[in-house]
Length: 80
Image (cartoon, rainbow, N blue to C red; front, side, top):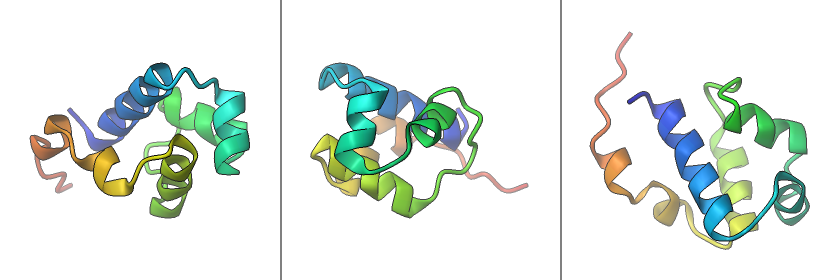
């Protein structure tokens, strides 16, 4: 799995678990809804770490919690 897909899936799962819409996450994180949608629809293949930190803050988790899953630990190196 590519990293951007793992980020997209993790974000979507967390939003579902916390029952957060794009609009609510945008309000809680101060990230524009269009940016969140671009991540969820895989239009953004490289969201910045600051954006991910803001999303994590809005979700009430740390970056370590966001990336601390098996799917991220199993990612292959992306050397292109």
